[in-house]
Image 1 (spheres, rainbow, N blue to C red):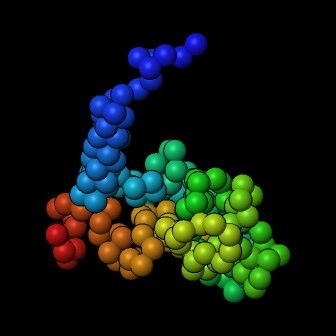
Image 2 (cartoon, rainbow, N blue to C red):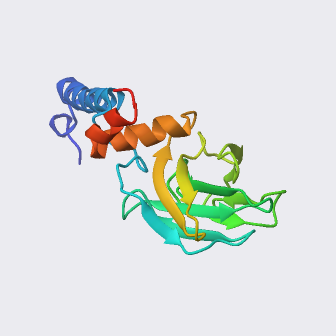
Length: 179
């Protein structure tokens, strides 16, 4: 039998509400201040990901950190594209589907999300935002290297400079990256 003294008081409810509100406010402030790192935002050094990538082929790799998933895709026209392989909805792993659209797409099998492989923009499903770009370069022998990341809407130079400033500020200054 439940008695009146077993039920939570108004003071107990207010204490729980204040604690939860304080935690949410603190988390929001940390995110807004940039104190918590974004997934896929790293200061990783360049990483060789493949000796060669053929047209229509995709290669999965870890970048910028060992826990981050990324994909390098050679499109039919020869363009080399790098994208985070982490869905922006609930962080499920993305797969490249070459037969979908002119360049294929990046598909999230968890909830049916889709991304344009060339631009990283959302093409369907629940993902709320575009995919970060993984900056790739190809050396004279055809080897493909991941050299940095760029956030959606950020140009490649800004992404390179952001990563370089974090790991080697002197070089960033020398090549003209703004502080």
